[in-house]
Length: 342
Ligand code: MRU
Image 1 (cartoon, protein in one colour):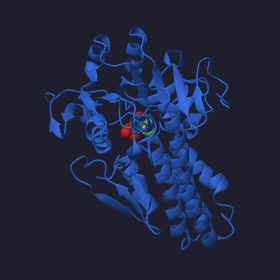
Image 2 (image 1 turned 180 degrees about the horizontal axis):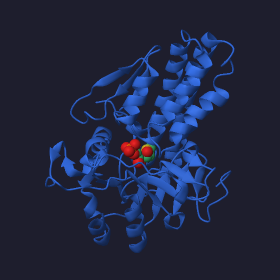
Image 3 (image 1 turned 180 degrees about the vertical axis):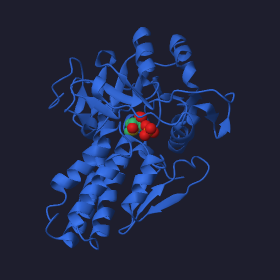
Image 4 (image 1 turned 60 degrees about the vertical axis):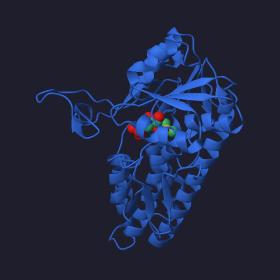
């Protein structure tokens, strides 16, 4: 069995996206040949994870530029596609970061030569994909140093290769420590309601051969109070200038629990997940998803007809609960605010 799953592949004319809605039991690839299809696979969460949707959107821009060649106003077409792609999901900054960089740096011929723009944006998407790969590899190595023989590392959601272009973030650090021969184990939260932990992280842990146990989200306090977890590491969808960060719903309660039980609590993310335009986490837009995701389980209705549900997809953890932020530049520690060099 290969030791790495891939979230997306660019074939030269089409973006192939692994349909994460069908995992872990079916490996099915969706072929996107238009930017609208890329929007749909991001919006419907066939592909998800902050860095992965950033790279997918960059290839969406490449596809938009190809489609623009036959349009009356190619520049206007590409700019409208950028706005549309950015609107697919609001919380992870990597999506807007990638699309904005495509326009600002990746398309010098935009407005003058539509054919050249298409080539430039394709090359730039490749560059952003490689950039994500390099950042994740670097941060995984810094993160691996945080783990010791005997650690049991608790994590939430999915932060592995499926959530990125390659390697993963928090999962990348765990995997790197394991590959270095460290005697570690993992506790993975199932991550209701989308079940990224049960469906995706468990698959990545099995694939990598890392020993682990899956728990329901409500069992986190039990495992910490019984000494079953020694450290916590999670991903991040957007990190504000003061170090507050948004991540999958349930992350904040893990940070509070970790503080109460005296456990180190880290987030891991590439520098592309920072949003220096916002001072604190209070400014991070939180995606609200359909209540049916909560009222059902694995497609089966579980709550009485007439029930209503809240479904915020992310929460914000205040920086004071963080032991450190693992990035491709190294591990930043409190007080947070200077981000050039840890
Ligand atoms: O809703 P999702 O599955 O896109 O949420 C993903 C997360 O919250 C991850 O923890 C985050 O994107 C970091 S992934 C490297």
